[in-house]
Length: 266
Image 1 (cartoon, rainbow, N blue to C red):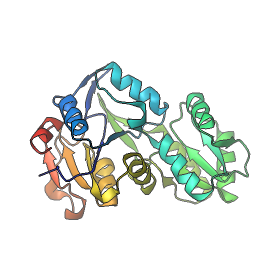
Image 2: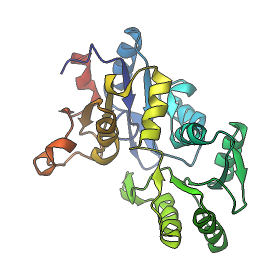
Image 3: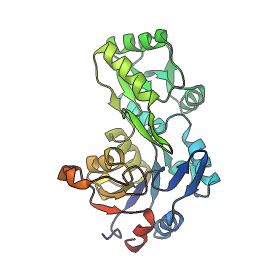
Image 4: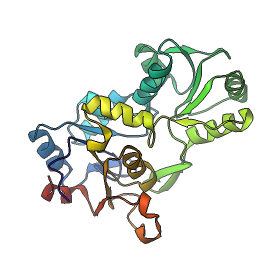
């Protein structure tokens, strides 16, 4: 596949650019060279993770610590895309938030109006460490009163070094959805909110981008949603995936064992 006509690149993190094993992490072979070649071509890139337990700048700093040079503004997460989603609908609306204090502080500094009242315009579920039933009930009442239920991700689990890690955010969103008889709107991967955030950051339409990641249901689905070119890397969660059993419309445009193979296409 030729990628010289692509106007911007979107990468996943874990399993794509970085490999984690327990508390250790290292940059995947070829990742530094791929990012350097894209930048040398004058084209923009972004990294999008569905992690919502830290501000984007903290994720970027963590990647720099393991040797992956990444600017803060190149790091995208659902904390950025939820802002795009809300501002496109009601820039002055209030949000009932289920998240840790670091995330709450960051969103408030970003200009979002956080409330604990049941007349909120939206309920946003990020990663939560703990949650009380009283707060879940209040969030559900807000949704019943008309608030939109938003979640960073609704995937039941994500890949960890020692196997699947169950998503507390998805559990929390599911509890509110059940109590309020509604379906949450995803603002992380894969979603139109994420695509809009990526497109704004890169200054390019989704259909002109390449999305590279190891998760068929997250990364490849994100690219398919926007008509982007999609490349599945087998260095992460999809290592043993049999694409023959996947509907043709959901398959990636190309498959590589690792990002270093992209060097021949750039």
